[in-house]
Length: 428
Ligand code: LLP
Image (cartoon, rainbow, N blue to C red; front, side, top):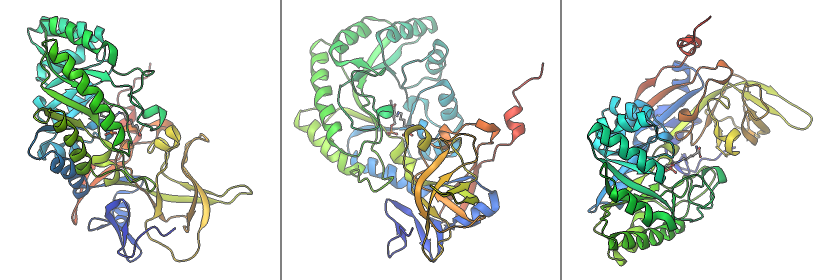
């Protein structure tokens, strides 16, 4: 299937293009990387990540603002290092993620800690590291954080994650701003929770946050959220509790299959107009984008192992699987799949599947491809929530990762082998 434009660009993937038949990321032919490091292989474009970040930075220019990369999208050290050097803070959800930020040279003061189930050990670790803010998700978490901070003789900076009850109109598994899910504090209980937080000596209220969901491709849910949050901010401040920053949670969705989310700078100009109109333009703004910074910066290269024609369906069996790319199996998510070297001529419809022993192990259904065993496919939009969600199911080693920078390439993670996986195990 030829999805390239006349300029050789793939829509939605500005750093991926064809030179002749060859698929290139920036200045690097992807086939060369597969030949050198094998498959499955994740490859990321540095320029693509920085361009995605720059759109947020432009949108927030001239304001007090902090962009905290939601590292759950892709937590590889070199990716964190790139964003740390570009001035980002980080949105973390575990003590492990905090260790990664520190190992990558991130500034703990720019770290915010989200999540409904922080343990006491993780709270203590984050307090010792001096993180910028805990995004607290329940009243009982406030009490525990107060006790842990008091025991350490520290004061925990807190923001309460308020559930605005806004429908992000995204997949139910990644929609988080509605009443009936586990996240955040209900809007109607928020003022009482803020009063409680302000009464605890181990805590200092610094902000308010929310997160309505992921893969949002429209600005309307954000605009609805702002109004709900500002109503609350005004109420909380009337009660004598100052709110320094407003954190709008995760970032925009990306184009997997022709979706057209607004550009981050356009989104922010609409959001800031709303903040300004209500007299809140001088606040400190925060946002926690994950997917939109890395998703379309990455591809996963995989080799075709076998073609298996069938009566009902044809299968294209590749060497990447649901353990490497879990999104189709988990969310029935769509990722474009293209040949790394385009063959002329008509294609055949295939279900692209991996070697794992489950019928749910598919990467794409009914895809028109002209390929032969031994040839390479690229699964697109694989920079976010792929490697970071990869597992060792079927004792498959997780793939290697490469960062492309112009014509330079850096191996940023070696392929895992069975010995790596067995290292922490013991026979009895
Ligand atoms: N902040 C919080 C509190 C979050 O829970 C998330 C994502 C983000 C920020 C980042 O959202 P983003 O900018 O990436 O939309 N594994 C799923 C996505 C799960 C998102 C979970 N929370 C997927 O592959 O689609």
